[in-house]
Image 1 (cartoon, rainbow, N blue to C red):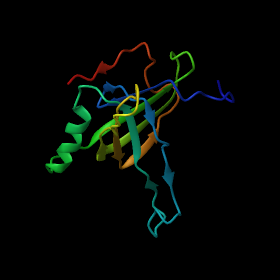
Image 2: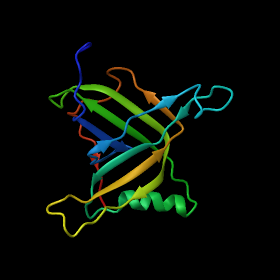
Image 3: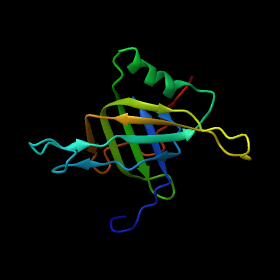
Length: 148
């Protein structure tokens, strides 16, 4: 598999071990030595935006509301990237200490036909760990699924 390009369309996102259906993830970014980091050269982790079709579930919104209420909201978020068959785990990242810094509801347009309504959750996090190859389970291990 090394040296072959990987497709970006087979992935799963888990919050504290619970799978959440996400359709799009913005790039995972770590910087050092830029204006985004402090004078000591400490790494800066840019926030990541998760996007999904709006459903009846309010789980992402409720998580953001925890921050507004001043309650602890940090979670471990795992992003698992699979090969084109969806069976072999090829990459895995953990966002440590992730918390929602922004939630956005759908843009609504009465003139648009059959346009999907989306919600977005922007996560800030303390650290990103690119996990060692083979350190995560294969897609055959079925994670719990999010309920409302």
